[in-house]
Length: 329
Ligand code: 8YV
Image (cartoon, helix red, strand yellow):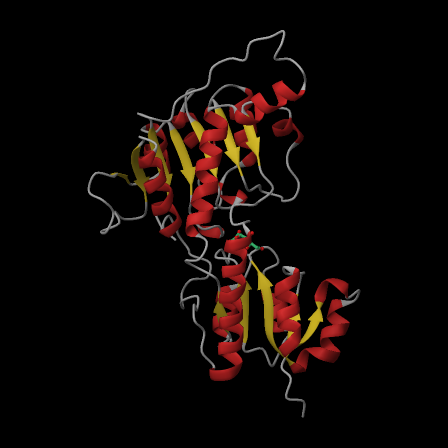
């Protein structure tokens, strides 16, 4: 019997990480296979782990088609596209990469707040279009003195809060329950609508998945109001995108900064035409340093599993498919 463990990789990972994985394991590259069910019938019985990401995930059908599966190792903190419940039912361990990307994602959230409030991208387009010599560029809005409502005060939410405070903003947040270790001066609101009602900025930092789908809907956007702005660095699924487009078109809210979308990489054409919106291609954790740290943690989990049956950062039991809205990560 071969000593080299075999892995299924549903989609490509970062090149350097893929190389490091391929040095120690036999990798089946799912995205290059035409007939996946037939391929898995032949090779599946030898596959002991899935190497995936917050983008490619692992669904119940895949998990159930791999009888020798022991672990799902994921690159990314969000595991919403992984059917954790299906994995745990079968005794399959799951890991993600928490902790190492919080600051980076929070930086991106603040980059979006600043870009939207100071109209940075719009101003850049204005200069490049040669309009400066003949036209004036209008004013932006200050962050200082405004209320930053963080939807989901988990580890990333806390990092966003610290940065927002550094810019002179007042922090409010909504979680299922008040976070006991949150600074006492952070205002707590029990749900998304009351948070939006009392905020100038609504910053989405909850995990994705069934429990948070469309948590930000037309009613929440209405509550945010005509001077309110939305930032989303979490998952596109948390925001009802059709309702958001309508709210922006009708002036129900003033603007938005979005790193994530409901049907990535598709972005609604209507959003692309709007000057008051800043659009990013899901890059919140996209720095060399952070991706390196994520890759190292991924490898610690992968090697830890095959050397000692130990995951450095396991996804806890009971984390799959929450029945009620999961506000805190
Ligand atoms: C990554 C992310 O882009 O960690 C997450 O949940 O969304 C991002 O950091 C993604 O997981 C990598 O594919």
